[in-house]
Image 1: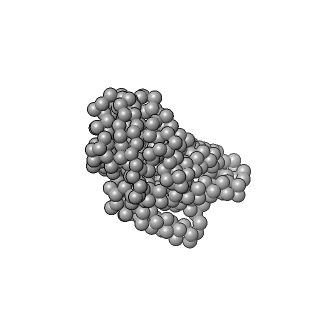
Image 2: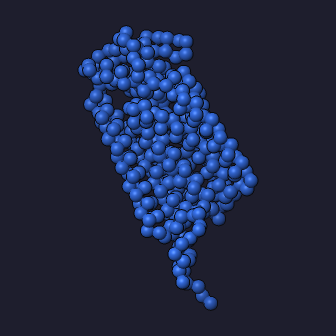
Image 3: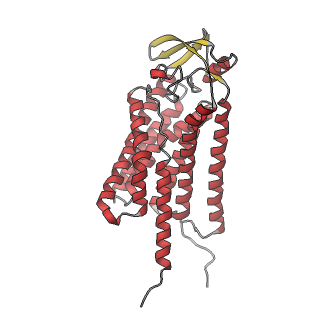
Length: 347
């Protein structure tokens, strides 16, 4: 007689409701990616300063080398206090002032970093479709791949710590990448991005502790420390996000922690792959391949950007490779297990 109820704390992956929820999550990931892409598309054809400005007036390191404000790291990390002698209260004030004039017009910006103040004259530029592709397409692709990795982990390994770790990483990394696309828009997006930025390193460390095997008592202990550090970053980050000086320090600290977390996971995967040799699973082999470019390059860029004070633009178009390779490995191992179970036995 089939039982109709269960006291198991784990989800029943054969349930129609569970599978419907996973499918809905996949659709939501696609919708979120498309919505963020549409928001970013509003830049096309507009006149902008030649650099981005966050809602708190801080100039981020994101941009293209051909932009007047990004070239040689001229303004990254500085705070805009005035434009053409008029005090600005937010990044939106800067964009509105520039967009009222045709591209090519020179504007005078008053910038501050710490106790230092300077005045800089820069010509505005027209934002092109090619710039949209170069700047936003990699983040959109990376965000979608990470979200779908989380959905896949929930579908094929919901009861394992590895599944939980991949779901957490996929969700946080996906939010981090997609919110970056609309980073220079509403304040709420900046807060969401900062929250994901603070907790993403802990998700990387936790994955390193459970993949491809758990580290015994070290897993809960070091995992708790990693999440505690992220919480200690996230709280002041949210409270002081509107303060340019504090924001700069907390952002740089988060980038260093992010680089450490990615480096720790990469090192763990390489060591475990060498240890396993030919016995390495498809997931482990694929993860190592994707991590070399998908984690190694972004980690180095994040660390260099933090050390340079934001002078080096953070541009990691290879970030999508890690979630893509992990997803491939998950599916490959799943197919292999099912094939082994279905294989006939010979008496």
